Amino acid sequence: MEQFNRYYLDLLKNKYAQFSGRASRSEFWYFVLFNLIISIVLGILDGTLGTSYTYTTMSNTMAGATTEIASASMTQTIGYIQSLYSLAVLIPSIAVSIRRLHDTDRSGWWLLLGVIPIVNFIGIFVLLFFYVQDSQAGDNRFGPNPKGL
Image (cartoon, rainbow, N blue to C red; front, side, top):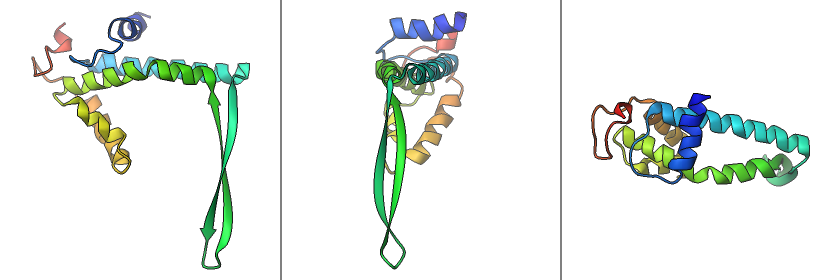
């Protein structure tokens, strides 16, 4: 419970949109863990309460040389409560990700690797590699080491 208060609630309350400074590995990963747990619980709650909607998308594709048209459908369910929560923690998620990159002495612009359409598949693995690295020892251009605080 101490980690929840320290790394999740404190981050939401005191560092909601703080993009400067550094975030330790534990601060980042605890935030990701608690965020994931809360999202799963809210998804289950959405399903239980019926506060979600399901939609189906259809796509037609050409199959083979005979120009036969094949139909494919995809069904997706979106929960209202989980969507509102995701929207509420979007800014703190981006902020803690940028501060984590700062902790490894990288610019927050590296975060764009995850959203550029062509490179995002590889970019996500690059970002994951950066996120699991240890803090840069001592002070860097983004501030003091959070381990020493």
